[in-house]
Length: 258
Image (cartoon, rainbow, N blue to C red):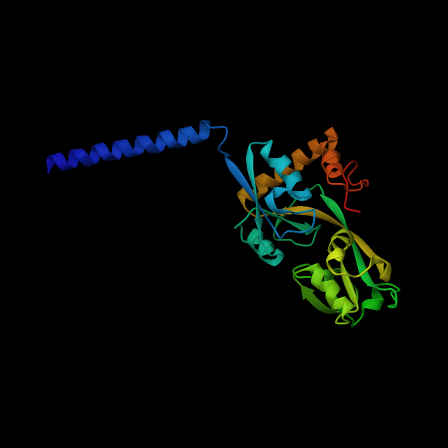
């Protein structure tokens, strides 16, 4: 019995030492990120693409990896991404500024959404009142009704290409959404741009939102500081230019999808 107790003590000591060495090695290893920011968003045109190659993912990667924080994009349907951030299961997603109160919001906007209505030239549009009681398609999870002062009949879709098919077949009279995303989806529909009108509704700031947790608040602080550094150095403008995005004044030097 004495020998068994001695062996157990040795095993406990060895296990403790192994754990300490592993922890020290990870802490000392520059290739092991001390933190990871998990960014949840569906793939959205050139903004969020597979392989972290999208415009927004490249910006956020620059923000965090230069700070020694790992960055990972997780493809999630937008409603699920919002809920996951709120529940602190992931750390970050995107939102229109001031849309949610139960999250931590980044101070610097990533871009502006030009909210527009797309319709055939034969369909009149004289302002948002034209959407009253009309069948209107838009991406699932983007609650544009909040920004429209009249009640619509929403037809939510998971792909904007399908929204154009609904428009072509007469199932909806309008599509609303971000101008850039709609123009990216149009070629998949077979409809000619010359057959359509793109009518502006309003412009909205887009910014990252973070989980209401210690990790989320820490990542928000890093984001605010690093984004200002990218703006001041001109690095942010270069990222947008590489993605072929027109530049418009936003917070002094930032840019937007136009």
